[in-house]
Image (cartoon, rainbow, N blue to C red; front, side, top):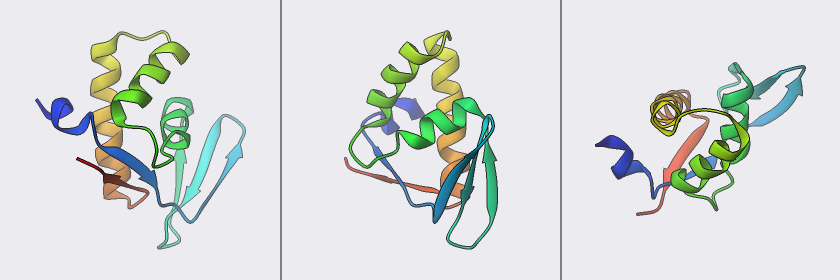
Length: 94
């Protein structure tokens, strides 16, 4: 399973800058592209501090949001792929 491979990875935010705009988090990539993250995406992105693993972030988000673990994992996998593709995070560690 892909989650088992990623759970010990440590995401690091590499965005050029970020700011809150209402309920959205606006982030700029190093290529000056602008992306808007919803509440869930923003919560994950702000936890990408190069200290916590995906698994640790998942636990924090389970406390923060009323969501089933399997749904959150699916959403996190999709979000990680998207943020990597947009060059907003990198995964480090094991």
